[in-house]
Structures are given as structure tokens and as C-alpha cells.
Figure 1 (cartoon, rainbow, N blue to C red):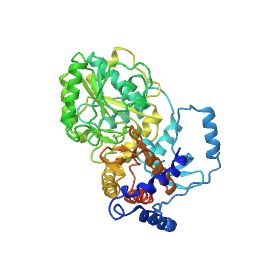
Figure 2 (cartoon, rainbow, N blue to C red):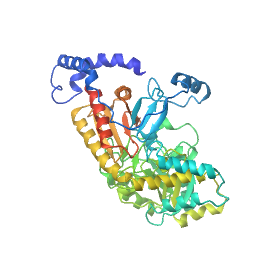
Figure 3 (cartoon, rainbow, N blue to C red):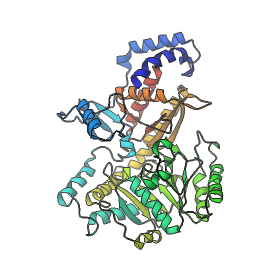
Figure 4 (tube, rainbow, N blue to C red):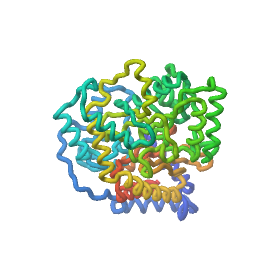
Length: 486
């Protein structure tokens, strides 16, 4: 699709380049832009941004090629599994914030395995914890005692506010959110849950109901979830006025339920939804409304948690609220399949009404990795780094927005940032094809970013928290170079 697009891209932009960029070239004739592009192409080799130096070279790769792997994938794996890029990348090695392909070429990983690599690829402390625990005891189930699960649960509880100190371990964020929703329903005796439009909370039966983007929902029974207007400062009807959005939650309770509900679930920053930070003042107002209706407040920290926002360890802390239940995954294990639900002792008691069990939840290898992750975040001051480097990256991206009309919005916090591309600032028309084109070109330069949002026009930047200022500059320089050639 991208190959077919590029030829038409050149034709369209030979006619419309004058509206793409601001400043010096934005007011000149298109002919001068074409001449400028030719000059850029002439000096292409010298002007391409270069990766920051890095003291690691992977061993030679002797495995199957990308072509062979893709062939097997098409034959033996689900056709629902999609991939980035016209020529999919065969990733064979990783160190900290960098990935390496089958030819040994290095790439800056600005996506972090979808906000999962908190400490960095193959961080030695996390690897050692996994290897040492695997050598000693790989699996035992929670039917027997083991210090790994207990030590990690204690350390995790100590990172949370209030009385949030009872931990249930799962294998993923979907599992964690499923369990949290069930706990809320059991504790309150109510079935109705309120989620947000544009939300993503998982792809199982209950979490698919809480998810509110049609491209992630199958036509199966999904009951008991009401979706409130999304408090999106960029596209939302009330801009950044959080309390106005919050009134919709009150209306849903009054006119869509019995008046009492099980709970409210939301991310502080919507990840899959396009890195949308909820409007200021929204969460305190909604939490108050939910409490009055007898519901519990669930904070989905699968992507925003574990120091990623920089200013705080948890995303919900940026809004000045304390939830009743917190769910987490991704960054909790730095790539190990691990998730968790944390709540209060009183609420946790509801699961004793029947038998609740998870064979792999709390596995000693996974919990040993989780404890190592917490120690690395603390030892290497990764939360502070996320704040400092993330702030610098956001400043530079905002400056890029002032330079290119194609950038409609720069948003997020810490090292969870989004750049939304639009072809019209007033209409906010999603620049879908342009997003794909830029992603392809960034890969050629050596930068890997994600994309998201309902329209697929938002760059998702969620790199490992060891990301440096030099990495941030290279990322923005690569974007500037690519967009400057359009």
C-alpha cells in the first residue's frame, strides 16, 4: 500500500507543497519548493541524521532471513497478526534503547515494544534475575511458598498510595483488567461499568466491552458497559475543560443505569487511542460522581505506569486521585509476560467467596524479573530520566509542530508522547497516508516509532526509559529531515 502511495504522493504534493510547510517556503511558489527538494536530494548523503554512538555490536546472525520467517508466519500463524512496514523488520538482537536487524544494522527503538521496555532491551540486571531464578526454580504454582512472589508483592505495594496493598498477579494487561472489572462487580453487587470512548482495555469478553474503538471490537455479546464522551483536549467538544466532560458520566448514570454502578475504568493517558492525556480536572470530578453512585474507580496503568510519565510513578497521580483498584502490565516486567491487580484488603476479600486461581500468575521467574525492574528504575533514576529527556523531546517536537502544518498536535507526558498528523488544522483531517510514508522513511534512517489513534495518524513514542537526550535529538532530527523532503 505504501509503495503505491509514494508515486501518487509526489504528484499530489507537487501541487500542494505550499500549504504543507510554514515560514520561508510556505509563501513561495510550488516551483521553488520543487527546486529546494532537488537540492536536498543532491546533498542527501551528507545531511541524513546519524545515530548516536553506542558501544555494542551484536554477534553475527545465522538464522533464517526475514523472507523465510514471513513465509512461515503466513502459513502457520494467525492471519490476524499484522506487522509494520512494507518490508517487515527481522529483529534479532537488542540492547537498552536499540534494536538490531538480521544484517547487524542498529535502530533507535522509540516504541519500546509498545510501552513495555521500561529498563531497556536485555538489561543485565533483569536478565540475571530471570536466568538465576530459572536455574533454581522455574515454576511451582502459588500452592507452595516461594519468596519471589512475596518479595515482589511487598515491593509493588510500597509503590502505591493509601491502602492499595493486596496484589493479584496475572499474565497480561487484558487479564488484569478482566479481573479488576469482575472484582468491582462482585464488591458492589452491580453490573454496570462506565468506560470512555476511544478507550482500549483488552480483547477478552469483558475488556472488549470496555474498549471503545470499533476496529478492536468483534460482534460478540458485550454487556453492561456504558461509554462516556472522551475528555480529549485536541478533538473533544469541550477542549481542555475537564469538568464539562465529567457531566456526561453523571448523565449516563442517571439515564442509562439503575443509579448505582459497579465502577469506572480509564487510563490516565490513552495509549492505543493515540496518547491522549485526559483533560485537566476530569478525573477528580468523575471519581467523585462514581463514589456517589456506589462504584469503584479502576486505574488502568498498563501503559502509563512504572515511571513512564516522569513526573510521577503512576499516571493517575498526575490527576491527583487515588483509585480503588490499579491494573498494570507491560513495563512491570520489561518484556516478561506479567500483569497485576492491586486493591485494598477490604475489596480483595470478595474473591474468597469462590475459588480464584491463576496457574501462571505469580510465577517465580516472572516475579523475580518484576522485582529486578523496580530495583533498576530506582537505582538508575529512570523516572527522573523520563521526566528530563521526555520534557526535552516534547519541546523539540513542539518546535517541529511550529514548522510543519502537517503536525496538528504534540501531547503526552514524560516518555509517553504522541504526535498527531492532519492535512487540515481546522477540520483536523487525519493524515493517514502521510503517517505511513513518514514511518517508512524514519525506518530507513534508523528510527522505529509506533502509530495509533482511531485513524492511525498518531505517532506513538514510548521508548525505553533509558532513552537519552542524544536519542531524542536524533529522533526529532530524523522527523525534521523526512518532513522537510515532502
